[in-house]
Image 1 (cartoon, helix red, strand yellow):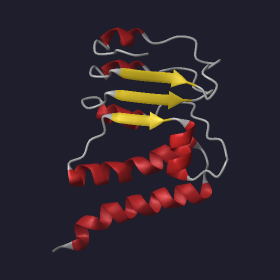
Image 2 (spheres, helix red, strand yellow):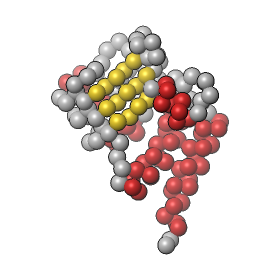
Image 3 (spheres, rainbow, N blue to C red):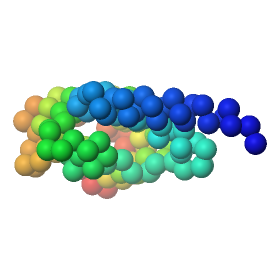
Image 4 (spheres, rainbow, N blue to C red):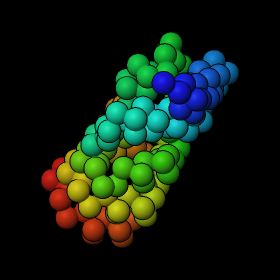
Length: 139
């Protein structure tokens, strides 16, 4: 079998591991791991219907060893999951706005926006596009 098809996986894995070694910025790490996740998901026909961006999940994924990751924005790569996304959990004290495009997740049933103590002091309002979230059962 032709092994050239594995070249994108090798590149994505290399970039993700390099980012993990040199960078503790949550957004950069998520961006580095996104192509790897997409390649694996596409090759196996797997799509995510739940995304957990809690501090515990990010620590487990990136092995931050007690360092705090600050998520200031939602990664725009999440938009690729709008047809499948059912649950989105975001834990951040630094998230200051939820992008309008979150309203495209019309199948979203659960959306958690909180910090580790339950409150996000920076996030003050939600976008008008939240009116499109007809399946939302829990906010």
